[in-house]
Image (tube, one colour):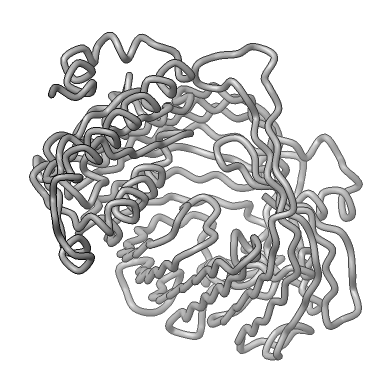
Length: 487
C-alpha cells in the first residue's frame, strides 16, 4: 500500500503553492492516513508492553515546506535529529517538540510545525511546515536621547527636540542563509550612519560565522559624570558634543545546538568637547586629550536552552563575557572586565511561571576613568524602581526574581491579509517581581556601596514577532514609586 504521503513527496512543488490553511488541511489528512496505516500494520504484531516501549522507528525522510526564502540546510542545522536516525516510539512526540523549539529559536519563522508521518511500524518521515517572517523591514526610526521613556517625560518634560529620527533598513535573511544586513540612517538629537552584515554559516560544517560592520555617530549631549544622589549630569552647548567612529568584526564558533562562542574586535575613535576634559571632569578619559583611539577585544561564551529566546518561559541560559579595552593593563581607558550571567525559567501548573536572573561584573584595575564606570542603570543592567538613577562603579551584582501568570491571549486580523502577517497576536502575563543589587565604587554616593532592593507588579504584553512591552509599578527602598514602561 502506498501512503498518501508518497504522492505528496513527488509533488512537493505543488504543495508549496497552496495557502497556509489548505496546507493544514492536507497535513491533517496525511496524519490521519499515516495513523491508519500504522494501526493496520501494527495489528498483526504480537508483543508485550515492555517490547513496545523499546521499539524504535527510523527517520526515512525530512521534508520541509514553507521555506520560500530560507535554505534547507539552515533549518536542518538547527535540528538535533537527522535522516537515518532512530527514535524510540515513546519519545517521538518529545523529540519532535524539541526540534520545533530549536527551529523557532532561529527567529526566522513566525510559525513552526514538526509532524510525524508514519510509513510502517519501523519507519517514519518528518514533515516541517514553516511560516516565514517578513524579513525585509524598512522601519521608521524614532529614538529618545534619554535612557528611558519615563526619564524623558519626567526629567525633560517630553521635549521633542531630544528625539532622533530616520530609517532603519534591516533584512534578517538576506540570502536565505540566516544572514542579516542592517543599515541605519538617523538624524536629529543623535546622528548615526552605520552598516552591519552577519553571516552565521561561514564553513561547510556550519559551525563558524562572521559579522562585520562600522559607522559614525554624533550626539548633542553627553553625560560627563553622575551626582552624589546618582543622577546623570549632562553637557550640552548647542552643537554635537561627542563624535564616534568604529570598525568591528567578530567570529562565532558553534558547538552543538546550544553553545556558541564569539570573538570580536572593535576599533573605536571617540572625540568629546574640550570643556569636559578641561573643566567638568578631567577623569573622563583619565587623559588630557579629548580624542581617544582604542580597541575593544571580547570573548563571549553563551549557552541557551530555553523554549523561546525572545521571551523564555522554560529552560535556562548562561553567558560569560571577558573583555579587554586598550592594549595596556593600566592608565588611561585601559580596562579588563569579566561579566557572567545566568537565567533560569520555570513552568508551573495552571499557566504560572517564575524566573531567576543573575548578572555581575568586575573591572580591573579599580582606578577607572568615568568612561568605563557604567554599572547599574544602563542597557539591561537596571533595577526596576530605580529608573531615574544610575549607580557607577567597578563591580556590581544584580538579581531579578519574577512570578507571572498568563491571563489571556487573542488575535487581531490585519487590515491587509498577507501570507506572512495575516493576524496580530497578543498574549498577556500578569507578574510580580523583586530586584536586588549592589555596586562597589571607590567614591561614595547615595546608592553606591550599599545593598539595594526594589519590587512591584505589572503586566507583560507579547505581540507580533515576540515583541514585548512591559508596564510596571515599582517601589524602591528610598520610598520612591511610579509606573514605568519597558521593552
